[in-house]
Image 1 (cartoon, helix red, strand yellow):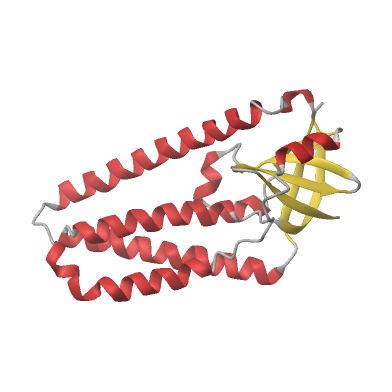
Image 2 (cartoon, rainbow, N blue to C red):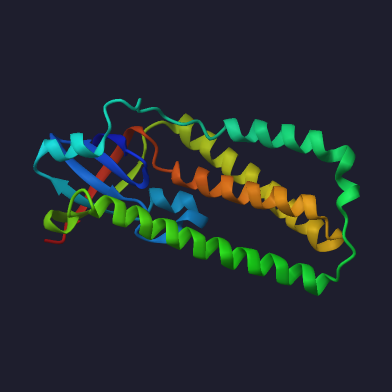
Length: 214
């Protein structure tokens, strides 16, 4: 069946799903590993909590903020622009370091990134719990994916395009130890995480009920 997704104000971990005359809080961050392979969001069930009181929905969705469907494809253009601007200066940032050191730096930064993501994920959970206790609601599992095939194609193109730049940047850093490339790669990694959250976008979606847990 068809549903409609709205974002929770200042909380990218959760969505408000409206379908079949009911509203649900959908937790898209219950399994953090999905953010690394975001298209699995469309094939694995999401935990949802049924909202009986519509005032709670109004409380979570700020009426002053326009609900819009962010276009992840926009980021690919930014990446191309940045790459073209820095190319003439890139060799100035080569640092003579060993391959072992460069590998250690990348592994360390990946671990720090994961710890930081875990912290943000917990912070968004606490933020929601300060407004409403979702454990009081009926818990279910739903499969959800975007209704628009065009959006799915754009999302996959943007994701793999940015991922390609990250792999290239990591390879260049491993070989040349270029500090600027490392900084840009980290920026692209953060942008990739942001894109991953858009796997379940604001707007029309197709959803299927799996089962109720309580």
